[in-house]
Length: 258
Ligand SMILES: Nc1ncnc2c1ncn2[C@@H]1O[C@H](COP(=O)(O)OP(=O)(O)O)[C@@H](O)[C@H]1O
Ligand SMILES: [Mg+2]
Image: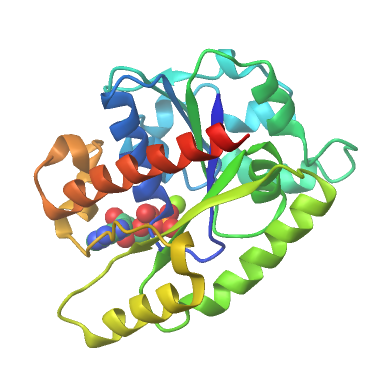
């Protein structure tokens, strides 16, 4: 199983939208896919049609009570896509785990027991706290959604420092599969400029596929559906399909190299 963390400590940059739609694309082409919701807000769970009152078990149980992933799963409406949902309890996990010696490795240990999937995505909360550290310690690689806005690069350097810290201390094998530009607006010269700057600065690390600002992407979660199902032909869905294709190519390359 390949494990991809989707992280950026900024909120509202498209982590959850990316997690839901890329996971859906992978499931659609037949990869057995798991999505772990690691944000106490539970937006990925909601966006995949799992209402709060249906989350009897969750990622909180995996992290805090060492529950098996297999015991905390929910199916989704998308064949081949399972979810470990998140509940608000998860916001207390950072404190509850503070004295646990293996607190950074809870998710990694749980995933080591789970081999029913080809790929696992972890939707991280908007912080660099213990939850995100658990994701980075468990992941093979990191996908960073980056909103095309003026301060985008500033937050990125902090994230990259955290990745360096994690590779030194917790997970020497952690890679960065790519940076995905999100909420791109063709009509806004500033987003254009930011996208160019990011490519100048980070080169090939940036995916070719750019996710446009698209209202269908933001409507889909209120229907409990991935945009790919809600409107598979909208510009946002088409961009996520391209991103998923590129992701597969990059994952297969790193696999070959390993
Ligand atoms: N490309 C996009 N175009 C329009 N709205 C988007 C796009 N990506 C995300 N959104 C909306 O922006 C908000 C934040 O996105 P989300 O994926 O939840 O970000 P994060 O998980 O990083 O906080 C949500 O309301 C989402 O529906
Ligand atoms: Mg989110």
